[in-house]
Image 1 (spheres, one colour):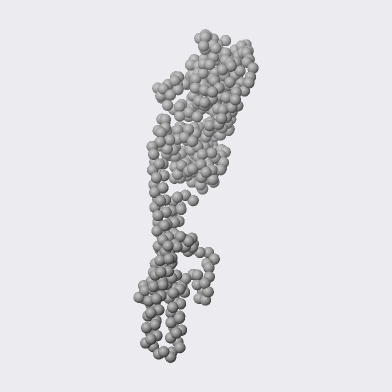
Image 2 (cartoon, one colour; image 1 turned 180 degrees about the vertical axis):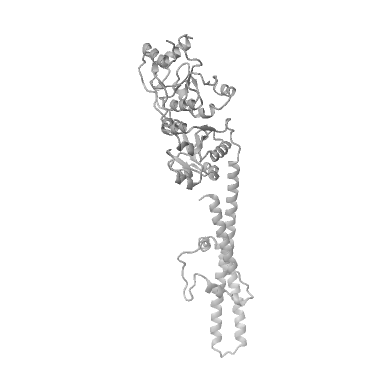
Length: 452
């Protein structure tokens, strides 16, 4: 139960207590509203014996819990009740003296009045005191809850780090399909439609969660334990994870992406064409495979580019490392390569050339450039290949073995896979190998990267 629900519950309890207090309020000069009437109407009295409620209401339960803390009130009430008893006893004595001394009913009336007013007055005053004390305590709790809620809203409304332009990117149905199949980057697929539409349509994607557009901001601000209770199979995203928003035609997904970008999420994406476009995706696009190059071919063309060989027919050659920053820094990189992390590819392909050069320190990829992508093995590079193809970069290749199978340079270390935030593993031992130049040149000629 969150703070708003608890506060609403407490306000209902206060209302019940105030109603009970008003029903117990008695005018001492009015005989018809005597304490006996209140006792007879009490839910704890059945006419002959006192009894307990099987299921007390919230107000009655609050009174029972507060009785232990009302000792100070009880002492004052007992003193007031004794004074009231003495006054009423004197009044009865005066009535007895004025009546017939031989009347036997006078003494019975005196005893009945004493018992009647002693029990009724004390119970009534104690209930009123407990109600007043309880209402005051509950109101103070409500005031603290409101203050905590206002502070929380104030902290949540603090300015976030502005995201890089553009605020969100569009992913093709094939790119979304590949992202899920390869798990190329930390991501979360969010369907922002209403729950009825989400349960009605069976999406051809795994691990999609449903957060309606109206609940998106409050849901993303949940604490980790609350998020885990609502979505046990999905990890709460951080600010740099890819958030892919899905809707029927994409309009609600765009609004959701803008809202999350304003919260500081830098990896917002939408499904281009919406869910309708995903469902109509052909099998040919679903199974688009990258063009692979082996290690010797990649090493050979890099050496030729370094030597400015005339045999290269690849203009604008780029060998791009798509791993994370920590992997590149800790385990080295292939000499002659540049760096662009795979989670930044969706938005990077949409920025202008000057911004690209400022952010990544190399020229932006052109449609006719030759691009060779590599990662630790080839999953992330294969997804970047899909994104490059969607952007119109046709001469794109993937280094098949990745840095794990390079083994041509001792500064490029092999290592096991690990997630961001985990402890980096120790490098894997390997033996240096040599290039098979003849096989490498033949492969490059078949890929039309070398002139015959």
